[in-house]
Image: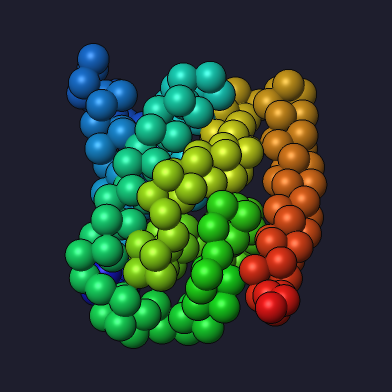
Length: 203
């Protein structure tokens, strides 16, 4: 994964658009598969989401992007379960501290908070969730709900680049407002849940 992040150059959105367009009817499936592969690595998924907006517009682009990113996140989760806790935590590097602190004994709100929090990429959350025993159902639900507004905003940016206009610009603003609100709500719920789980049990 480190080698991929350092040596593999992702194409620009325009290049992705050209390549996917050249596949014709297979283009959407190829986009989902490529997005899933990118989500398995430390390579940022931003480029894929923006390309999705340029290629398919905000509606279909959001659906395809969510399918791709969810598949990649689930793949990373189950790979981490197979690799084991210590192997994965060592691989997280500088992200280990915050991932371990937030996800250890966490659940739905812990995953949501990390998904929404600025500056934390998807891949350490994916692998950390699998390594630290987040239940698969909670992980999947949190991933879908927390990833959606961010993906919509990036898709809208791609659509705006392809066809500048007020509606796409407004969609970017609204989706990021939703991200901010959900981040605050999720963080507060996580703190409440964390305090409740760590409270001493009376005899």
